[in-house]
Every structure is written in structure tokens, then in C-alpha cells.
Image 1 (cartoon, rainbow over the protein chains, first blue to last red):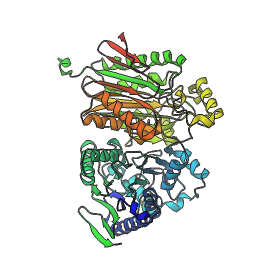
Image 2 (image 1 turned 60 degrees about the horizontal axis):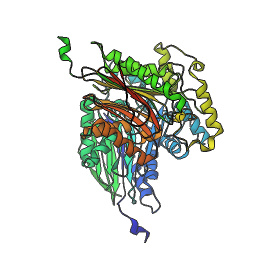
Image 3 (image 1 turned 60 degrees about the vertical axis):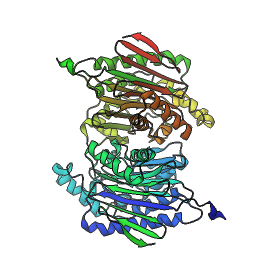
Image 4 (image 1 turned 180 degrees about the vertical axis):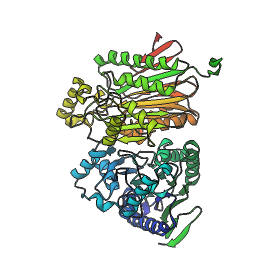
Length: 316
Length: 316
């Protein structure tokens, strides 16, 4: 009887960051995005479920996986510190939670959710965000446990090759971000995005990730989108809000994602990628960086890829 | 000869915050917005000028005027501290600078401009933003010089009437923000917005003001917009980016501003106001709060108002 209210086949679509991902990191990224998409879908396949819970669960998997620049594995500021940003949003009511400059937590996306669920605000940054996490009882994790050798080496490379750094925006270490979009059987959409930012960033730098409409946006009336790539470029064009706006004017998620990214590159010179779902469960995946790891689950299939025009299919 | 390149009559349009402004503050606000608009226009009327310089100058006037919730006169966090947010953006190349959680400076908008002009980033928050201001030689101002009796009383009222505070979003002390949009004779657009935020906010709270597309947006291809009102509601709908998007689909600035604000109120319940200029110099002013102080200068006339449907005209 209850299943009679099912209107939509649930879908979860995740990304593990756009950039110039080196060959040896490819299998790690693909393994991670598939695992995250499966975990999110596991939630969506229950009768009691929400797209919001699914995107949070999927992003947490990638935050815990040091193959990604988010949570454990976050890249470092020019001072060698960790400052993580995250956002979560639900399409039903546009409720949003975001954090920036967070340290000493494993899962910034869950702190963003706490901002959404338990404050009158949508965004806390810096010491206020960290104090809020402590007050809410979020477990304290020494940053040393979050910092990987890969992140330390990336900062070393940045500092020693600094003259060229600004023209190497394609480097993975300047781009990684993780994100997820989902639609549940009730037709509700959600998105979440989480990142360590860019290697060598100034302390206090806020990228696109926690900005509503830039790093993520969703609205049940249209769709949901999550972005990754050169944060400043994504923010200047409000990439995800632009994608959702293009869908409102009639484009499908694939066309909207591609057009918004092309416009961004033309206006700013930056490269990025985005994943988009329509409120009918259609998928849009596009990137103008070299690579972007992604995976989605719909019906009994897990789709994934990391190079342009790839679409590997496994059974769930 | 040089004037032969003039293509557009320059216009500057400013606001001094939307909200339930008490009667005794009305003349102070009107005086302040007219003064700010005149100062911005003074820059636009020179041969060497830019819309960017004009919006910065106009916003600085209002930051220095304690009749407004920005710079001196900023409202206080629940801990009694000052945390100011600002953004500045130019429409030619979408360049943007923003700050959040700033203290000890008179003019946050100028720190935002420094972020734009002298870092690879577009947004610095918290201690990183404050350290950046110091490093750039921005004069240190004790917060005591920025905090007014009005701000202290507003926090007192918030704390003692706390049970009702969340339903009193119309109060001026929860809404104020200042902003400016301008077009120069070369057809370039700029916008800037600055605020102390909302009385009683949590430390670290970032409102709509410094978020690209929420508190401000501009693109020479369409227009420029600056918002004021309930920050969380403005951010959830990316109000200024939405307004510019509606202009791209054919609406004039007045229609676009009104439609986006109506949509925002329907989706979030919040009230706000916005000022918008098209790239032809057309003006759009709308608010669904009780009042919003605004003024603009075009040709020899200074227009201003604070109640719905008001349009007072003075000669320049």
C-alpha cells in the first residue's frame, strides 16, 4: 500500500573532484565514488528515507576516504593548516547549512547539517563554526589525523614551484572537492558538497563550496547540482544556481550543466565540473577539467567514470 | 573628442537597508542615502571614472554614518561583538572581493576591494580576513569606536525579548545593510554591499551580503543588483543572481526585482529589498519590508524615497 505513493525511481549521483588527476589516483577515486554512491543508494532504497540523509551519507564516505580532498585528505593552507568548507541543502524548502574554515572534525558536511537543523542561520565560518561544532558535541579530531602525506607533499610542491603555481590550476591538489545530489522516491531533492579547498590558500579563504548557488544548489521545482573545480571561477558565475536556472528555462540536466560550464570557462578562464539531477531523475554530468570521478546508482545499476565520455556499468 | 566615446548616462543607485525603520530614523536614513548617492555620482561625472570606484565611495559614506547598520553603527552578535560582512563586484570581468567576520576597520567594503585586487581569492572570512587587513595596512579602529548606543540597545532588546525575537524579522535591527549599484559612461557596471549583519547573531554567522549572487551581483551583459533584508532568505534564493537572470530572459530591472522578491517571500517567508540597474541605466527598486531607504542620481536629479511608491526629486 505504502509503496503506492512511490512516484520516482530514486537516484544518487556523486563526484569526487575535478582536476588533472594523476594516473595512480584513478582507481582510488573510482573505488571511492562507487562506494559513496552505493552507500547513499542504500538509504534511498529504504521506505523511510530522504534525499538529504542520502547525500550526507555519501559525502561522509568520501570525507573519510583519504583519496579525496575533503575531511581526511584535505589539502593545506599556505600555513600548513586545515580549513574545511561544506554545504548541504534540501530542495523542498531551500533549507541550507554551510560551514567554512572548519578544523578538527572528520565530517564537515554533518556540521553543515547541524547549522541547518539547529540554528536560525545558514552559514557559520571560522572560530564561530568550530565553537558551534564543539558545543554540539561533534567529536574532536586532531588535525594531524586528517592531514595526509599527499596533502603535505602538495603544499611542498606549491611552495617550491610557487612561480608557476597560479598557472597550474589543473593540478588535482588545487581542485578536489566531493559532492552528491539525490532524489528520493517522494520526489524530494538534496545536494551536499565538501572540500579542503585549494593547496596554498590564504588562511580564511572561502571557496565556492559553502556558497549557496555556487558549490551547490537544489530546488524541488527543478533539480539539484553540486560543483567542483576552480572555486573562484565557480563562485563568480554562481555555477549551480545558473544550472538550475537553465533547467527552468527548458534545458535538460546534461545540456544545462554543459552550457553553464562553457559559459564559466569563457567568462573566467577557470575549469570545473558539475553533477546535476532533474526532479524527474535525469542525470547531467560534465567537466572541462582533464578528469572528474563520478558515479550514480539508479535501478539495479552502478554507473561510473573519470575520463570524458566514460560510462562503466556494474550491477548493484 | 574623448567625450565622443560616451555611450551611457552614468547612474548611481544606493540603498540604506530594508526593514521596519522607526519614524525618528527616517530623516537620518534619507539624508545618508542622498549624501552617498551624490558622492558616488561625483566620481561618475569625472572623465576618468569607474563604476567600481563610485560604488565603493558611496558605500564608505554609509559605513561612516552611524544611521546605518554597516561599519560604524553595525549591530552586535549575541556576545556583544562586531562582525562585519561586505562584497564588491565588477561586471566587466565578474571580479569579486568579499569579507566576513571583520572587526576593527571603518570600511569593510575597502577590505573587500583589497581581496579582489591583491589576492587570487574572492572571499576571506574571520581571523584570516582580519590578518589580511592588518597586513595590507588598513588602519586599526577599536571596535568601541564602531559600536553605537543604538546597537547596544538593540542587543539588549534582543536578549530581553528573546522569546519573540525570531518572529520580529521586520525589526530594523535585524535587517539593515547598505549597498550601491552604478553604471559608468563606458557602460561598465559594479555593485557593493556592506553590513553588520543581524542583532544577536551567532559568532561566525555569515549572512547573504558577502555571498556572490546573494547580497550582490553584476554582469555588464545584463545589470547590477544589491540586496538588503533577511539574509538567510536572500541567500536561499540567490536573490541578486536571480534578478540578473530574469533580466537576461527579458524583464526590465523593475519587473525582475519585484518578481524575484515575490518569489523569495513565497518560498522562504522572509522580507527584503533590492536595487537594480540595467546595462542601459534603467532603475529597479522594490521592497516587501515596511521601508527601505534609497536614492539615485541621473542627469541633474537626485531621486529618493523610503516608503512604498515614494519618489522625491531634488536638483543635484
